[in-house]
Image 1 (cartoon, rainbow, N blue to C red):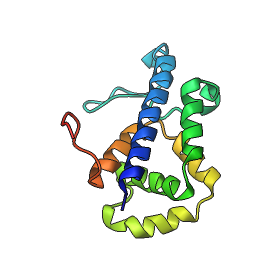
Image 2 (image 1 turned 180 degrees about the vertical axis):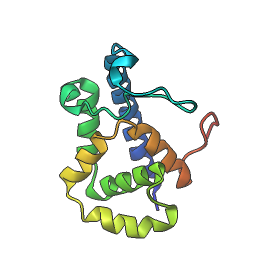
Image 3 (image 1 turned 45 degrees about the horizontal axis):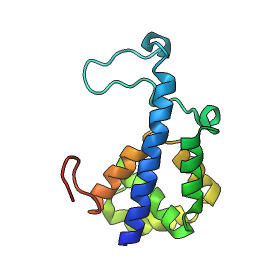
Amino acid sequence: MLHELEVLELRHIAHLALDARNVRDRLLEKVPEADMGEPIPGRGEHNPSAGIVLNGVLSAEPEFVALRQAIAALTRDIRVKLWVATRIGRGDLAILDWERAIGEASALTDDDIVAGLLDEPDLHELLRKGLYMLGAATPPGEAR
């Protein structure tokens, strides 16, 4: 499914996505939670700002520029695999759907793939999970 070089590329994108997420979170931490308009859940993780898309506001930030440029610099093949690994990490696809998902993602334009990835605030987490499910990463906290 993924070759070692592709895994390294996807890990690099995940690292850049984490940097971009940290910039986004620093901007939103100044917004009072009450202003988000979300009820506090009884249990589970609570992050009312997770669904807010700020790519337009943050598009000039160096971390977002680096992420966008890194995704755009990938070969078409690796960019498609990045898209599929992210969808596996989200739970939209199963590993057994790999070939079908590659075919479907190949039908998307490069602009659609890049925009879809950049619009995902949890890209780093979804990619980390996808790589783990594909057997290309160790569980968090374990050395490889």
